[in-house]
Amino acid sequence: MKVLGIAGSPRRGGNTDLLLAEVMKGATSRGAEVKTIILNDLKIAPCQHCDACLETGRCKVEDDMQMVYRELEDADRIVLASPIQFMGITAQMKAMIDRCQALWARKYLLKIAPLGNGRERKGFFISVAGRKIANVFEPALVMIKTVFRILDITYAGELLFLGVDEKRAIAKQPDALRQAFLAGQELVGKSLSQ
Ligand SMILES: Cc1cc2nc3c(=O)[nH]c(=O)nc-3n(C[C@H](O)[C@H](O)[C@H](O)COP(=O)(O)O)c2cc1C
Image 1 (cartoon, protein in one colour):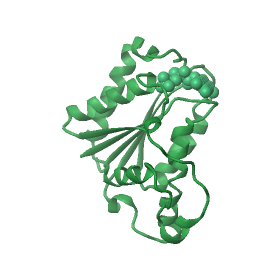
Image 2 (cartoon, protein in one colour; image 1 turned 60 degrees about the vertical axis):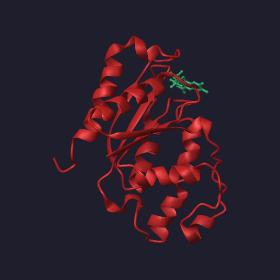
Image 3 (cartoon, helix red, strand yellow; image 1 turned 90 degrees about the vertical axis):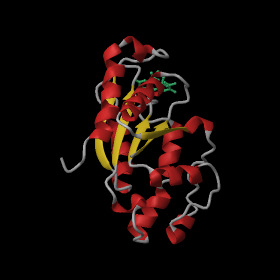
Image 4 (tube, protein in one colour; image 1 turned 90 degrees about the horizontal axis):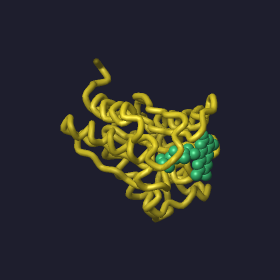
């Protein structure tokens, strides 16, 4: 089983990075093969709305997103991690998601087999917000659930923490990292049919 973690924060070693690392450790402890992509280290242009993908199902922008498409195709479990910025996901994560327009075109316009060839795949979301505002995660959840649905990836849950602002503040909540480790184990341990 391959687990792909995608880190959307610009802050290395920050709160969502720490949570993502624990999820991946949990998955590894159950025998999964894991890989983490740091979006901030990649060159992923925002979607140019050139509509080339509507004809071909392929994005014509030759940047690091081409590698991300391949990783998205290979993974059995996909963990997206993004802190909340201005009530939503980070620009890095949004750019990657917008480039999934090519995958939307494949599925809905060109009727090409979905990524993963219909095998069982699951997705998980990790986020933190500095403030304790009601509904702060709602816009992010709508976007994340939408991209998983378009990619035919079953939404398997999330870990969301409010009031986590300073770098590594999440580490002061020992239960948070433990929850992340257990979530990683559960993500690879259960079959959807169970
Ligand atoms: C540009 C920017 C915008 C932010 N906007 C919000 C916000 O709308 N609501 C909130 O609760 N926290 C906001 N935050 C705080 C981050 O969510 C918080 O610092 C978080 O712990 C960062 O996680 P990270 O260490 O994984 O990057 C913002 C931070 C930045 C840098």
